Amino acid sequence: MEKKKKVLISGASISGLTLAYWLIKYGFEVTVVEKNQGLRLGGQNIDVKGPAWEIVQRMGLDKKVVAATTTEVGIRFVNTRNKTVAEFPKDNALSMTQEIEILRGDLVELLYQPVKEKAEFLFGNQITKVSETSSMIEVSFQHGENAEYNLLLIAEGIGSHTRQLVFGKSINFRYLGLYCAYLTIKKDRTDTRWARWCNTERGIVFLIRPDNHGKTRACIFFRSPERGYEKLSIEKQKKLLTDKIKGVGWESARIKNEIERSDDLYFERVSQVKAKYWYKDRVAMTGDAAYCATPISGKGTDAAIAGAYILAGELVTGKSHGQAFHNYEVLMRPYIHKIQKRPPGVPNLVYPTSKFGVAMINTLFRIVASPPAKLIARIFGGSKSKPKHEIELKDYSKAIKV
Image (cartoon, rainbow, N blue to C red; front, side):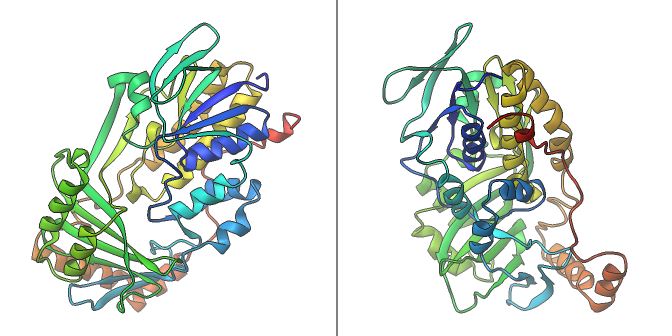
């Protein structure tokens, strides 16, 4: 595809910034619009592995990513008395902790540094209208004058506003029966370099994880029919959460107090995005806006970075944007289909609502972490090894002059 095309990316997300990096490298003129006043640097632990790690290496950011890891050494499953029932170091195949754990905000900052002077950033703004001519996309902004671009690439979150403007009601969601909340809390004497997972009654699960900034990251999951809680005001969300976790035990009182004074609470339903099409005319989607796999899949970062890399590569090597968008879907669809498969036991087994169910899941964790089970796992390859090849990542730079 001809270089020096003007491209507008909506969303300074992990996928949006990765997309900006590669498009700039390939000679595109890039503008990024982000509705927040600056980078969204909040968020929890994410892992960089598989295709994401391979692309990060190609970007020359691997050493910086490793230096910014959270130092988490593994995960402990504890009961409401904070007694460890099972322990999985990060080199165990069953551990939630991966070799490279980094805070979402830290990764966003690392991705921003190489592009901040090379792309135009419109912070505190968003798209309000999209119209198309035969050769351009005309975009109206909440603040500022209209502008024209050759392409619009949507790299927003699960609740993407711009996606709604372009694709309307053609997007479906697959709700997994869970809500999740994330926030940063003060470090306490009970916090170590181990993550702690605690199942309580009522289908509520707490997950506390260390960070590399002297604080602690807390996650709360609870089972519920889909109620639209993510649309509530922040104060109503806080009230709902504190009422929900009150009296369930473990460190619920501590977390309740932290929720009440939190300034970075994120509250969302656990849903997958099911889009029949990822592009329309001169507009395409990537990342969570197109194919959110949910945080519990453990593949969100992989999909965000791989999708952005492939989309940029196909745009620079394709004969037209239409062909590029088509090729992008062909390459990504099988991978997304695989990672969107519901994890086993979610939510019924892993998030039990009764005292008996909590006892059963803790017993299961204990058995799996027992010395005989660990021995069997080692014999049959249960330790973490080099990941299998998950998706083809072409070296687009070999096909073009950059």
